[in-house]
Each structure stands twice: as C-alpha cells, then as structure tokens.
Length: 201
Image (cartoon, rainbow, N blue to C red; front, top):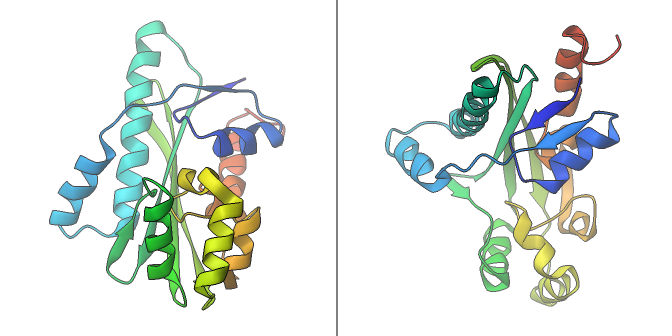
C-alpha cells in the first residue's frame, strides 16, 4: 500500500522512499505563520504548535482523499526550532540565515518534530520527539565561508543547516534521534505502519 505525504518536503519524501515506502506527495497549503502567531498568543508550547500544524496538514489532505474514497494513510509532519524563548523559521535569504546562525551560535537549541497519520478523514496516530543540538562558538569567517559554500540550500531548513551535509560542522554536541533532527521521527512511524500491515512485520 502506498502512502500520501501531506508535504512538499523533498527530505521527508526521500526518507520514506529510502525506507522502502511508495509515497505520493500532496502538499497541504496552510497558513503556518497565522497558526503560529495564534498559538504563541495562547502561550502554547512548541510541541503543541508542531503537532497542530501536522494535524492540520493531514486533515486538509484527508478531506480531499475522503471525497474520492482514497483509503491510504496520510502522513504529515512539522518541526519547530526553539532557542530559549524564541522560535525560528526558515530564513528568507542568506542575510537572514547569517543573522539566525549568529543568534544560535554557542547555544543549545531544540528541534521538536511531530508526525501524524490520518485515514478516512480522522487522525489515527501521532508522535512527537525532540532533539537538542549545541552549536559551537564558530568565527564570523567560518560563518561566511559556510554560507558561501552551502548557498541557498540553507534556506530550506528551519535551522539554516543540513546536518547530513556541511551543516554538521556548526555543532559541538548533538543529543537525539537523527531522523527527528531531519524533521520526521521515522522509527516510530515505521512501527505504526508495520502494526497496520502497510509494511511486513
């Protein structure tokens, strides 16, 4: 059975495909900024925001699938980056990425990743995981060289880095699951899919 991925993220799609899953990407268009602002005003924790965004994406695509009788599982995920009391989003350009990395430099931050599964219009499973990453106190010269070499690829990440590439040089310590850091807690998701006969147990 194939899955529907309610996301345009090439990284999440690649993770699922590398794990042997057949995936159809159907991006869910939601106003993430508006939702974050509303939940921030309610003093919601970052994990609640990540879960709410993932659920909204799954429900939106689930509504479309239900209209056509599509019974496939819909997988949706979202990730929040938290440093102290601040939430970070994907930088708009390289200048914004530089400012963001300067703010994260020398400090620990958390990546909170939520994943949900929906079917027939309802949420049937959810999982939230977090990882803590500590950036080293790198020099401005290193930062400039990093951004020049990594280029616009950093704009696709909430942290302005890809841990699986050059971005690993930014860190002195990493605590947490690798797939959670990439934005999709994959091992719990695979367990759910095995439990539901999507994968062989």
